[in-house]
Length: 439
Image 1 (cartoon, rainbow, N blue to C red):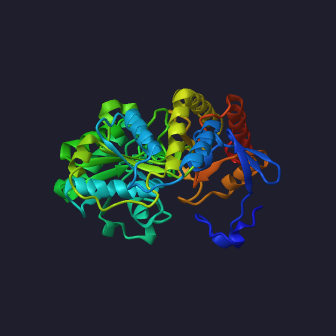
Image 2 (tube, helix red, strand yellow; image 1 turned 30 degrees about the horizontal axis):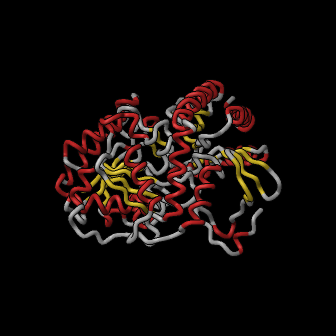
Image 3 (cartoon, helix red, strand yellow; image 1 turned 135 degrees about the vertical axis):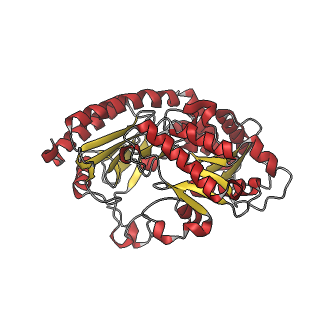
């Protein structure tokens, strides 16, 4: 185990009890540990490493750019920055739009909100955001997020946030037992929240097409209905694609599954943007939003905004997704993974719900009783039995991610098919072992 806790303050843990293996290298979907073990990464390390670890083309691009130019501020032009912006506008179809680069997802969301407020003429305008959402752990990110872990640390109302229910069809907050109906009701709730506040006071709606951290995969009816509700009221829609972008959900960006009916006004990116080879985030602004900002002074920016080294990694990453047809591969393998998980559900009554199916992202929700849908543990507490399952999987060379009662599967898009099949077989076996009362 690493002794980092003697010098590093770690996040998302009790710092004095932190312990974890030390990773010394990675290749493809596997990590090499200091103790010599080789571990299959079934979460892409927080859904970041979509290209796998140490993708040769991205590493080479970083090396070549480092030899030429590591850094200039955004006050100067840089070829990698321009090339990446053009690639992102092309893949998103944001013709005539612009890209603002950030360092990560949290500051991408903060700046998207800032731009939406400026473009709407509402510098303190309301932002409508969901319960059970995650938009970062910066102070503003926590305010925007409907996350039980951080909600008591910040006054979301003081940030102008209006909270609405999530499209959580398995436990529909509107009482519907039909997925599409629940999705439409959740979208209607957004429109109603805007109407109550007054559309002329709301700058934007900020939503994740798929809520990866909170394990919510919205019904197909939700996003187009949400887009229609915001467009009807003249309110900007910001799509947080930090997790769901770059093939994770079977498209370049998850909203694209709905075509033009799902197109947002702004979009935020990070994680898969460089495949996590270097830190980088981005905000994409539509041509219409950009037009409202183009002739005014923007007092905003970041020292490392559009860092040439990170942008070079991003250019290489976009090329790798395209050249290796990884978006299509995610769609194909995701369908295979989802089918196997649904088969597991039939074998293991502890599986209450399986969500996903649109790419290499799926959620298994575990329950104490399938009929009543009673959770194994109160949200977001990790059930002890699930914790034991995770530890045994790690002992057998597979790293799994869980949150509360949810097992979240998001392997790198480059995972070998045999490795994916073996990991799913291990999950199947361990579910039977650790939840025998449900077998």
